[in-house]
Image 1: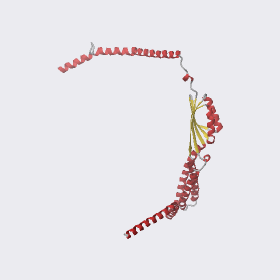
Image 2: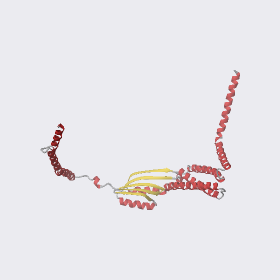
Image 3: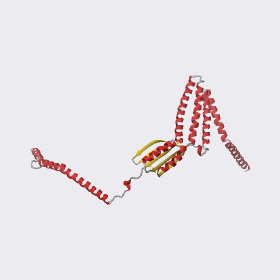
Image 4: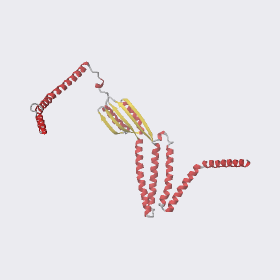
Length: 312
């Protein structure tokens, strides 16, 4: 019994010791992972150089890419802490206004665009309405809307804002990183020793140039949407007077007799059609019946003749 007790105490002490060791390891886990990542990057570069799988410059470039990627992530984290004035916001509004004079409203919109350095991305004119897609500098967006509200009666207004701060600074950081890498590879090209190294560096330069062009296009498009807000404006003209006017008794009688006259004209057309086309058709049908089945009876005679031959 004493031996069993000693063994149990030994096992319990061993478990407590293992728990203490694991807790100490978990506290240093983040530092160990960082050191492991750096050591793996260094070993990858060294092994690649030893094998001759890529030029020396390209091997060291992997470590530079990792460093720049971390820098881009850090800049994105800094962008998350920016104030509202420093954020990159895409603003859009949908407005519908009823005006008394569409021509005067068109002139007012043209004057406002000149005043606020705005422009119309698209415009569609109908009989009693106008549709505009206006691009207004974001700094003047609120002032433009406030002045536009005085043009007439507001029927509808909705606004939405999209925060693209993180995406904007991420693209900006990636673009700068790729430009730095491009300059680095262009300098490597002058120090390449073999044809293989030259071809490898030139391929990487072409790839970086395509990436820079694509990322730059995305950044320019996003920057344009941030710099210029969009206002979708629908101007509606006044309600037509005929739509609200009450009809008099005489006008209703006129409409009634007008409808009756239309009915009589329709009946007359039907009668004329029967006289012109119906009677000749009926006469033709009667003639055919008289020839085939009447006194002449061509079909009856033909049938009798055929029947007589079969009996013979």
